[in-house]
Amino acid sequence: MKRKIAVVTSSRADYAHLRWLLRDLGAHSAVDLQVVTLGPHLSLIFGHTGKAVTPAQKLTIECLLDSDTDVGMAKTIGVATLGLADALGRLRPDILLLIADRYEMLAPASVALALRIPIAHVEGGEVTFGAIDDAVRNALTKMSHLHFACTRRAAERIAALGEEPWRITFSGSLSLDYLQRERLLSRAQVQKKIAMRLEKDTVLCIYHPVTLLNNTVEEASEVFAALCDLRKQVLFIYPNADAGSRELIRRAELFVVKHPGSRVLVNLDHRTYLSVLKHVGVLVGNSSSGIIESTSLDVPAVNVGIRQQGREHAANVIDAPAERRAIRKAVIRALSAEFRRGISGLESPYGDGKASQIICDALLKTPLGPKLLFKRTDLA
Image 1: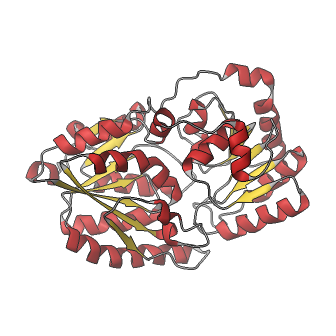
Image 2: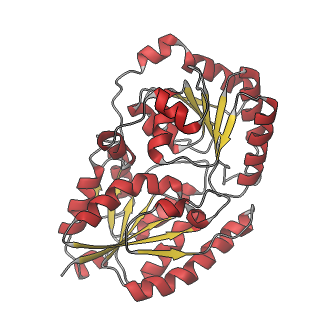
Image 3: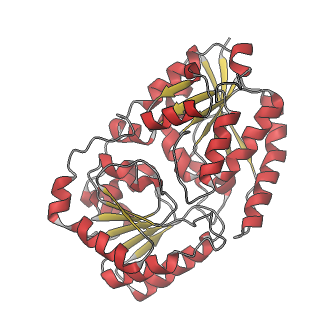
């Protein structure tokens, strides 16, 4: 009997991490792989990225409301829950795999809990004090039965939450598998692909709403002011589909009108994105990409504000408060030749790019049945 494994993906961000894992699971003779796409993946505004999800057996759940508010986010969870109840009720996988900390992941976790479907969770145990992601991630950890931690400290935090040690595996980050297993584009190829010339000190900006603030774009004015003061070429990539994202898109587009050498890109395939990241001068914003992938590419990153506060990172990442002078100072430091020399070859706390194989092995070897499903609750 094949082991039926279902994987949920909701956006470009998590699919970029899952791509090699899905390929490895799909190629395994002992796995019946099902992929569920939902949320921003099905939105034209955010690039309809679900079209890039390629496994043959794929279910789609329409749930993302045409909204830019926190109420819209909350309703999206409800709509997703209704659709997933029917889909997972029919599918009944042996294991449901979820990744990271997007708010819509609460829907499949809740449904799986009610249907007694064991959950495997990737990227638990990390810390991001400035976003609701932190609470979502911890909730998913307590609802899950297998845990794949991206850092050793994250694995320790999962254990501190009371999870049994045999359920916890240090896998490293799936995002680094891509860097190990695919060849990135050259600078010339990147410039041709995105139809623009990149300067050596181009600023790549990925800035998301800060979902724990009442005004989720409260920090944004200082970010855009700093970018304006720098007078550099800026390449923006669309933010996540959270409350306030459309306001951030509007501000980025207005910035580009006033700074003709800059651009706004809705989405890039992951190979192109990582290739762009490799060839820019610095990444500025509050994306997890500035924490994880940038280190392995020897690229400086300026982590702005509170969204990623508390997250482990290497010395190529400079933390800066959401204040224009501090951001500008951090970017100037990051672009200096001395700083670039000092970050070459840093060891990443996020593993060595072999997470997919580690996770595949554990998903196939873990015994199904009562031992997996029934969790002890007296270890915290």
